[in-house]
Amino acid sequence: MAFIDGFLYNMSMENKLPGIFEYNNFRLFLKDYWEARYSFDKSFTKSFVCKMLGLPRTRSYFNDVINGKEVTDTFIERFVKLIGFNKAEARFFRVLVRFNQAANPDEREFYFDQLISLNRTPTRIIDPKAYIFYNEWYHNVIRSLIDVLKVTETDYDELVKKIYPPVSSRKVKESLELLNELGMIRIDENGYYRQTEKSITTGDAVQDELIKQYQIQCLELAEQSLIGKGDLPHNFHTNTISISHEGYKRLEKHLAQFMAEVRSLVHKDEFPADRVYQMNIQLFPCSKGVDHE
Image (tube, rainbow, N blue to C red):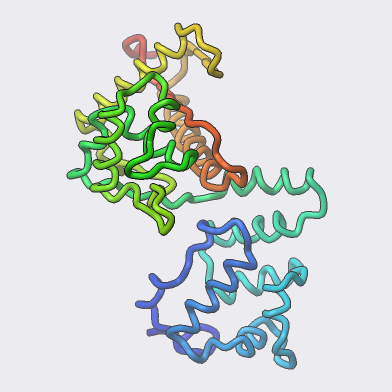
Protein backbone atom coordinates (compact mmCIF):
# COMPACT_ATOMS: atom_id res chain seq x y z
CA MET A 1 0.00 0.00 0.00
CA ALA A 2 1.21 3.52 -0.73
CA PHE A 3 0.02 7.12 -0.69
CA ILE A 4 0.03 8.82 -4.10
CA ASP A 5 -1.17 12.42 -4.40
CA GLY A 6 -2.90 12.09 -1.06
CA PHE A 7 -4.83 8.85 -1.54
CA LEU A 8 -4.20 5.23 -0.62
CA TYR A 9 -3.18 3.03 -3.52
CA ASN A 10 -2.86 -0.75 -3.52
CA MET A 11 0.30 -1.51 -5.53
CA SER A 12 -0.60 -5.22 -5.74
CA MET A 13 -3.52 -4.35 -8.01
CA GLU A 14 -1.32 -2.82 -10.72
CA ASN A 15 -1.41 -6.00 -12.77
CA LYS A 16 -5.12 -5.40 -13.36
CA LEU A 17 -4.50 -2.06 -15.03
CA PRO A 18 -4.22 -1.81 -18.85
CA GLY A 19 -0.84 -0.97 -20.41
CA ILE A 20 -0.55 2.10 -22.62
CA PHE A 21 1.55 0.25 -25.24
CA GLU A 22 -1.46 -1.92 -26.07
CA TYR A 23 -3.49 1.07 -27.32
CA ASN A 24 -3.81 3.06 -30.54
CA ASN A 25 -6.30 5.52 -28.99
CA PHE A 26 -5.50 7.44 -25.83
CA ARG A 27 -9.18 8.13 -25.09
CA LEU A 28 -9.99 4.42 -25.04
CA PHE A 29 -6.97 3.85 -22.81
CA LEU A 30 -8.15 6.51 -20.33
CA LYS A 31 -11.63 4.99 -20.28
CA ASP A 32 -10.32 1.45 -19.72
CA TYR A 33 -7.78 2.65 -17.15
CA TRP A 34 -10.42 4.47 -15.13
CA GLU A 35 -12.80 1.48 -15.18
CA ALA A 36 -10.04 -0.92 -14.11
CA ARG A 37 -8.76 1.41 -11.38
CA TYR A 38 -12.23 2.20 -10.05
CA SER A 39 -13.05 -1.52 -9.86
CA PHE A 40 -10.67 -1.90 -6.89
CA ASP A 41 -10.34 1.71 -5.72
CA LYS A 42 -13.77 3.31 -5.22
CA SER A 43 -12.15 6.63 -4.26
CA PHE A 44 -10.92 6.97 -7.84
CA THR A 45 -14.12 8.61 -9.06
CA LYS A 46 -14.33 10.84 -12.12
CA SER A 47 -14.83 13.81 -9.81
CA PHE A 48 -11.62 12.83 -8.02
CA VAL A 49 -9.81 12.55 -11.36
CA CYS A 50 -10.90 16.07 -12.28
CA LYS A 51 -9.70 17.32 -8.91
CA MET A 52 -6.28 15.68 -9.40
CA LEU A 53 -6.11 17.29 -12.85
CA GLY A 54 -6.47 20.69 -11.20
CA LEU A 55 -10.17 21.15 -11.92
CA PRO A 56 -11.87 20.88 -8.50
CA ARG A 57 -15.00 22.73 -9.62
CA THR A 58 -15.95 20.50 -12.53
CA ARG A 59 -16.94 16.87 -12.84
CA SER A 60 -17.34 16.68 -16.59
CA TYR A 61 -13.81 17.25 -17.94
CA PHE A 62 -12.74 13.59 -17.83
CA ASN A 63 -15.92 12.47 -19.63
CA ASP A 64 -15.48 15.30 -22.13
CA VAL A 65 -11.96 14.10 -22.95
CA ILE A 66 -13.14 10.51 -23.43
CA ASN A 67 -15.87 11.83 -25.73
CA GLY A 68 -13.50 13.86 -27.91
CA LYS A 69 -12.48 17.06 -26.15
CA GLU A 70 -8.99 18.21 -27.15
CA VAL A 71 -6.27 17.76 -24.52
CA THR A 72 -3.70 20.54 -24.28
CA ASP A 73 -0.01 20.00 -23.50
CA THR A 74 -0.63 21.16 -19.92
CA PHE A 75 -3.25 18.48 -19.33
CA ILE A 76 -1.20 15.83 -21.11
CA GLU A 77 1.42 16.31 -18.39
CA ARG A 78 -1.24 16.24 -15.68
CA PHE A 79 -2.54 12.91 -17.01
CA VAL A 80 1.04 11.58 -17.04
CA LYS A 81 1.40 12.48 -13.36
CA LEU A 82 -2.05 11.21 -12.42
CA ILE A 83 -1.51 7.78 -13.95
CA GLY A 84 2.11 7.51 -12.82
CA PHE A 85 3.67 6.53 -16.14
CA ASN A 86 7.35 5.64 -16.21
CA LYS A 87 9.56 7.55 -18.70
CA ALA A 88 8.98 5.22 -21.67
CA GLU A 89 5.22 5.10 -21.07
CA ALA A 90 5.03 8.88 -20.67
CA ARG A 91 6.85 9.46 -23.98
CA PHE A 92 4.52 7.07 -25.75
CA PHE A 93 1.39 8.63 -24.18
CA ARG A 94 2.42 12.16 -25.20
CA VAL A 95 2.97 11.11 -28.83
CA LEU A 96 -0.22 9.02 -28.88
CA VAL A 97 -2.30 12.03 -27.79
CA ARG A 98 -0.73 14.17 -30.51
CA PHE A 99 -1.23 11.41 -33.09
CA ASN A 100 -4.93 11.05 -32.22
CA GLN A 101 -5.43 14.81 -32.26
CA ALA A 102 -3.40 15.47 -35.44
CA ALA A 103 -5.20 17.82 -37.81
CA ASN A 104 -3.85 16.56 -41.16
CA PRO A 105 -2.42 13.39 -42.79
CA ASP A 106 1.19 14.63 -42.78
CA GLU A 107 1.00 15.34 -39.07
CA ARG A 108 -0.52 11.91 -38.39
CA GLU A 109 2.24 10.25 -40.42
CA PHE A 110 4.88 12.15 -38.45
CA TYR A 111 3.49 11.06 -35.07
CA PHE A 112 2.76 7.53 -36.29
CA ASP A 113 6.45 7.04 -37.11
CA GLN A 114 7.29 8.18 -33.58
CA LEU A 115 4.76 5.77 -32.10
CA ILE A 116 6.37 2.88 -33.95
CA SER A 117 9.83 3.78 -32.66
CA LEU A 118 8.61 4.23 -29.06
CA ASN A 119 6.29 1.24 -28.83
CA ARG A 120 6.97 -1.79 -26.65
CA THR A 121 4.76 -4.31 -28.41
CA PRO A 122 3.28 -6.95 -26.11
CA THR A 123 4.65 -10.38 -26.99
CA ARG A 124 3.98 -13.84 -25.71
CA ILE A 125 7.09 -15.78 -24.66
CA ILE A 126 6.79 -19.36 -25.86
CA ASP A 127 7.16 -22.13 -23.30
CA PRO A 128 10.13 -24.40 -24.22
CA LYS A 129 7.64 -27.31 -24.15
CA ALA A 130 5.96 -25.70 -27.17
CA TYR A 131 9.13 -25.61 -29.29
CA ILE A 132 7.62 -28.30 -31.50
CA PHE A 133 6.04 -25.25 -33.11
CA TYR A 134 9.46 -24.56 -34.68
CA ASN A 135 9.82 -28.05 -36.15
CA GLU A 136 8.37 -26.82 -39.45
CA TRP A 137 8.48 -23.37 -41.04
CA TYR A 138 4.86 -23.54 -42.14
CA HIS A 139 3.43 -23.61 -38.59
CA ASN A 140 4.25 -19.93 -38.21
CA VAL A 141 2.97 -19.11 -41.71
CA ILE A 142 -0.34 -20.85 -40.97
CA ARG A 143 -0.62 -19.04 -37.63
CA SER A 144 -0.19 -15.76 -39.49
CA LEU A 145 -2.46 -16.66 -42.43
CA ILE A 146 -5.49 -17.33 -40.26
CA ASP A 147 -5.36 -13.62 -39.46
CA VAL A 148 -5.94 -13.02 -43.19
CA LEU A 149 -8.39 -15.80 -44.15
CA LYS A 150 -11.60 -17.24 -42.72
CA VAL A 151 -10.53 -20.73 -41.63
CA THR A 152 -12.55 -23.35 -39.71
CA GLU A 153 -11.80 -26.88 -38.49
CA THR A 154 -13.43 -28.33 -41.60
CA ASP A 155 -12.94 -25.58 -44.19
CA TYR A 156 -9.28 -24.79 -44.78
CA ASP A 157 -8.92 -25.43 -48.54
CA GLU A 158 -8.27 -21.73 -49.23
CA LEU A 159 -5.53 -21.79 -46.59
CA VAL A 160 -3.85 -24.71 -48.36
CA LYS A 161 -3.97 -22.82 -51.68
CA LYS A 162 -2.40 -19.66 -50.27
CA ILE A 163 0.70 -21.16 -48.64
CA TYR A 164 3.92 -20.78 -50.62
CA PRO A 165 5.90 -22.95 -51.10
CA PRO A 166 2.97 -25.43 -51.18
CA VAL A 167 2.16 -27.63 -48.16
CA SER A 168 -0.14 -30.66 -48.28
CA SER A 169 -3.70 -30.54 -46.94
CA ARG A 170 -2.83 -33.22 -44.37
CA LYS A 171 0.07 -31.19 -42.98
CA VAL A 172 -2.07 -28.05 -42.81
CA LYS A 173 -4.75 -29.92 -40.84
CA GLU A 174 -2.12 -31.31 -38.44
CA SER A 175 -0.60 -27.83 -38.06
CA LEU A 176 -3.98 -26.29 -37.17
CA GLU A 177 -4.52 -28.98 -34.55
CA LEU A 178 -1.04 -28.35 -33.10
CA LEU A 179 -1.49 -24.57 -32.97
CA ASN A 180 -4.86 -24.98 -31.27
CA GLU A 181 -3.38 -27.44 -28.76
CA LEU A 182 -0.52 -25.05 -27.98
CA GLY A 183 -2.96 -22.18 -27.41
CA MET A 184 -1.52 -20.11 -30.26
CA ILE A 185 -4.86 -20.02 -32.05
CA ARG A 186 -8.45 -20.42 -30.88
CA ILE A 187 -11.91 -20.85 -32.38
CA ASP A 188 -14.04 -17.72 -32.04
CA GLU A 189 -17.79 -17.45 -31.52
CA ASN A 190 -18.38 -17.72 -35.30
CA GLY A 191 -16.37 -20.93 -35.63
CA TYR A 192 -13.30 -19.30 -37.22
CA TYR A 193 -9.72 -19.76 -36.09
CA ARG A 194 -8.11 -16.62 -34.66
CA GLN A 195 -4.64 -15.82 -33.28
CA THR A 196 -4.43 -15.62 -29.49
CA GLU A 197 -1.37 -13.33 -29.67
CA LYS A 198 -0.28 -10.92 -32.41
CA SER A 199 3.41 -11.29 -31.61
CA ILE A 200 5.38 -14.21 -30.12
CA THR A 201 9.01 -14.72 -29.12
CA THR A 202 11.28 -17.43 -27.75
CA GLY A 203 12.64 -15.04 -25.12
CA ASP A 204 16.31 -15.62 -24.30
CA ALA A 205 16.39 -19.18 -25.60
CA VAL A 206 17.15 -18.27 -29.21
CA GLN A 207 20.29 -20.42 -29.21
CA ASP A 208 18.28 -23.60 -28.70
CA GLU A 209 19.22 -26.10 -31.44
CA LEU A 210 15.60 -26.41 -32.55
CA ILE A 211 15.41 -22.65 -33.09
CA LYS A 212 18.61 -22.80 -35.13
CA GLN A 213 17.04 -25.47 -37.32
CA TYR A 214 13.97 -23.28 -37.81
CA GLN A 215 16.19 -20.36 -38.84
CA ILE A 216 17.91 -22.60 -41.40
CA GLN A 217 14.49 -23.44 -42.85
CA CYS A 218 13.70 -19.72 -43.10
CA LEU A 219 16.98 -19.12 -44.98
CA GLU A 220 16.04 -21.92 -47.38
CA LEU A 221 12.70 -20.18 -47.95
CA ALA A 222 14.62 -17.01 -48.81
CA GLU A 223 16.71 -18.96 -51.32
CA GLN A 224 13.60 -20.36 -53.00
CA SER A 225 12.09 -16.89 -53.18
CA LEU A 226 15.28 -15.42 -54.67
CA ILE A 227 15.71 -18.01 -57.44
CA GLY A 228 12.00 -18.54 -58.09
CA LYS A 229 10.40 -17.16 -61.23
CA GLY A 230 7.01 -16.41 -59.71
CA ASP A 231 5.41 -12.99 -59.53
CA LEU A 232 5.35 -12.79 -55.72
CA PRO A 233 7.03 -9.61 -54.41
CA HIS A 234 10.38 -9.84 -52.71
CA ASN A 235 12.97 -7.39 -51.43
CA PHE A 236 16.58 -8.47 -50.94
CA HIS A 237 19.57 -6.41 -49.79
CA THR A 238 23.13 -7.57 -49.07
CA ASN A 239 26.01 -5.69 -47.50
CA THR A 240 29.59 -6.74 -46.77
CA ILE A 241 31.22 -4.30 -44.35
CA SER A 242 34.37 -3.83 -42.29
CA ILE A 243 33.75 -2.33 -38.86
CA SER A 244 35.20 -2.20 -35.33
CA HIS A 245 33.91 -4.28 -32.42
CA GLU A 246 32.39 -1.12 -30.96
CA GLY A 247 30.69 -0.39 -34.28
CA TYR A 248 29.39 -3.95 -34.36
CA LYS A 249 27.82 -3.52 -30.93
CA ARG A 250 26.12 -0.33 -32.15
CA LEU A 251 24.76 -2.25 -35.16
CA GLU A 252 23.43 -4.93 -32.82
CA LYS A 253 21.62 -2.29 -30.80
CA HIS A 254 20.12 -0.68 -33.90
CA LEU A 255 19.02 -4.06 -35.27
CA ALA A 256 17.26 -4.88 -31.99
CA GLN A 257 15.54 -1.49 -32.12
CA PHE A 258 14.56 -2.01 -35.74
CA MET A 259 13.01 -5.42 -35.02
CA ALA A 260 11.07 -3.88 -32.14
CA GLU A 261 9.80 -1.23 -34.56
CA VAL A 262 8.79 -3.96 -37.04
CA ARG A 263 6.76 -5.75 -34.35
CA SER A 264 5.20 -2.45 -33.36
CA LEU A 265 4.28 -1.54 -36.94
CA VAL A 266 2.64 -4.95 -37.42
CA HIS A 267 0.82 -4.61 -34.10
CA LYS A 268 -0.51 -1.16 -35.02
CA ASP A 269 -1.30 -1.78 -38.70
CA GLU A 270 -4.75 -0.23 -39.10
CA PHE A 271 -5.45 -2.01 -42.41
CA PRO A 272 -6.54 -5.68 -42.73
CA ALA A 273 -3.65 -8.04 -43.50
CA ASP A 274 -3.70 -9.45 -47.05
CA ARG A 275 -0.50 -11.52 -47.20
CA VAL A 276 2.13 -13.21 -45.00
CA TYR A 277 5.77 -12.17 -45.41
CA GLN A 278 9.00 -13.67 -44.11
CA MET A 279 11.69 -11.27 -42.87
CA ASN A 280 15.21 -12.58 -42.19
CA ILE A 281 18.09 -10.41 -40.98
CA GLN A 282 21.59 -11.83 -40.54
CA LEU A 283 24.74 -10.16 -39.24
CA PHE A 284 27.74 -12.48 -38.93
CA PRO A 285 31.54 -12.38 -39.39
CA CYS A 286 33.21 -13.40 -42.66
CA SER A 287 36.75 -13.06 -41.30
CA LYS A 288 38.73 -13.49 -38.12
CA GLY A 289 39.52 -10.46 -35.99
CA VAL A 290 42.63 -8.33 -36.48
CA ASP A 291 44.54 -6.87 -33.51
CA HIS A 292 45.58 -3.23 -33.97
CA GLU A 293 48.58 -2.13 -31.94
